[in-house]
Length: 113
Image 1 (cartoon, one colour):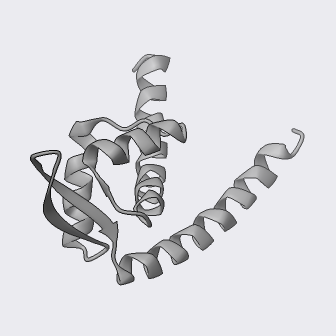
Image 2: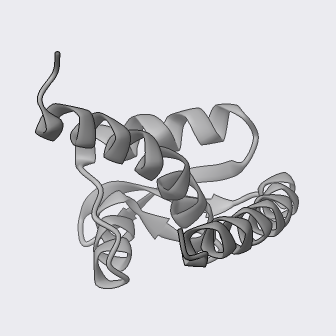
């Protein structure tokens, strides 16, 4: 039988996965490159590792939810990401879904046994 710490960590990762996508999409309503995106998310209390962020950005772009462009800034080429028009529409729908689900879970957890 797995120990409690392993079970908790697995469930924590599952819980965070969808929330991280929502946070990344929301943060990319304004343009960022990877480093500034991580800093902005961290400042808001959402930590994400580079090893998780960059594959997520590529996947979201492949799904048409983000656009990106390479530009030189501070004498370095950086890839800047921004929410696409389709991404903005999907974000709106995801926020509505998350809001409803959050309210339902809060109601369930707030009930006395």
